[in-house]
Amino acid sequence: MSQNLNNVIKQAEQIILGKPQQIRFALACLLARGHLLIEDLPGVGKTTLAHVLARTLGLQFQRIQFTSDLLPADILGVSVYQRDTGEFKFHPGPIFAQMILADEINRATPKAQSALLEAMEEQQVTIEGTTRALPAPFFVIATQNPAYQIGTFALPESQLDRFLMRIQMGYPDAHAERGLLSGVDRREIVAQLSPQMESNELLALQKRAREIFVSPALLDYVQAILRHTREQARYTHGLSPRAGLALLSAARAWALLDGRDAVIPEDVQAVLPGVVSHRLQAVGEHTKRSSELLVRDLIEAVAIP
Image (cartoon, rainbow, N blue to C red; front, side, top):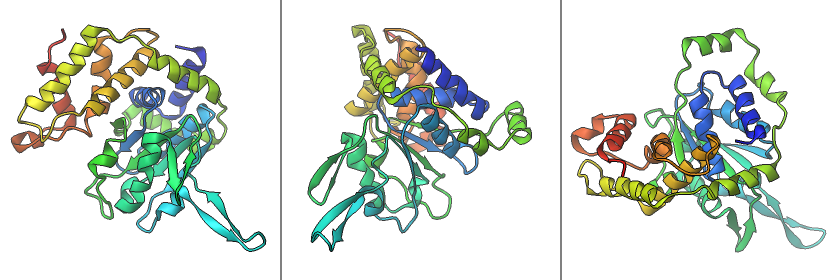
């Protein structure tokens, strides 16, 4: 791991207390050139994590508050007629930033949510017939409240699948919560954070992550996981090839964070909860099992070659 990347982790852990695993998941997702969905109750640090990563990584940051009256143009931008020139001038929306926080994404209508689809998949947006490239690196962190809360719209499967990982923050343990309660306001600390790397170095790390070696035996293991989900009646449908690619990308990034140049089965198992929890749906009596238990069942059911 590079020294600057190690500094990023240390600085983030000073703000997001007691959540080293969530920080590593978020960084692995970014190194894998993916997008992150954080689902949890309000007030557990979802938005703070996004702010900390943006400032620590030195990325241009924009926050979009998703509400029921949000329109796609509020995200993408709009062309405004200029009377002095007689022409339309495009005013870019907040999507034209390196890191986007889509805050409470499931409080917006599906039409507004769909404005992110092309951006997240192809790193570009098409507006009024013109395709415009987005900056690099480009990363979306979306937060969402539990579906049972009032005023939420469920994310369709096509939108969920654009997120490489979904994680939950959870409540802090007693020691971490004591530090939060007795310490300085986290917003004041975040405002004083200094970047620990430049965007060019982050792009280089993303490139290095794609070059992490994956052996044929490891590919056999990933294929066995995909095949198992497709053959078992406990799931509504199996994992797609895109999910397999996401699993490999995340495992490569996890290996990079551990300072290794090859992926091992433990890397796949480590990122499996974040990659498949929002892609696998159980049926029948298995719906009572949490996503954590479903992933544990999957790891236990598929033998390492």
